[in-house]
Amino acid sequence: MRQMTLAMVGFERYSKPTRRAAFLAEMSRVGPWRALCTLIEPVYPKAGKGRAPVGLERMMRIYFLQQWFNLSDPAEAALYDSLTMRQFAGIDLGHEPVPDETTLCKFRHLLERHDLGAAVFQCVHEHLEQHGLKLSAGTIVDASIIPAPSSTKNAAQARDPEMHQTKKGNQ
Image 1 (cartoon, rainbow, N blue to C red):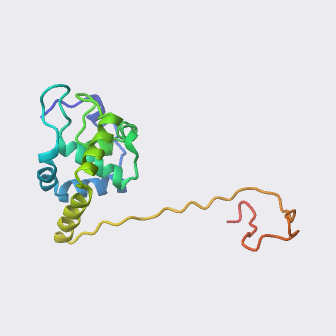
Image 2: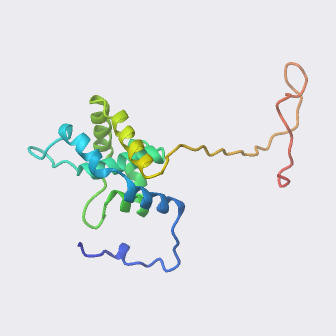
């Protein structure tokens, strides 16, 4: 085991697990990581000339973080920002950097080039179903109140029938 860094020592005396942390812990536990690596390994780059490739399981985990949390290829920023995501991906900033945007983009393109995206998600779906779990997408709706003057100054000189008035503070 690696030596613990100052960030890992536990200065957070009053922390509590978030829903994200609970979700990622569960996905880490039940995810078919070995099966996914076996599926992709034949087309994944091998060490040789040039820079050594990032571990396949780590890249899969980051790929899933991108899917689950709707992150773009510059997901590296989210990984630097979130300890929970780094722990899920197995990244210790005291020993290694987060894979850069180009590496993440090349991995996604590798999956696309070999038509592995559907096979990966089918593998995950079947594995989770065997464990009595289901993964689905949700939607967060943000309803904002925008201050605007009351007006009927439009072409028809009438109020828009779909517009409703509210007074800020009386939501």
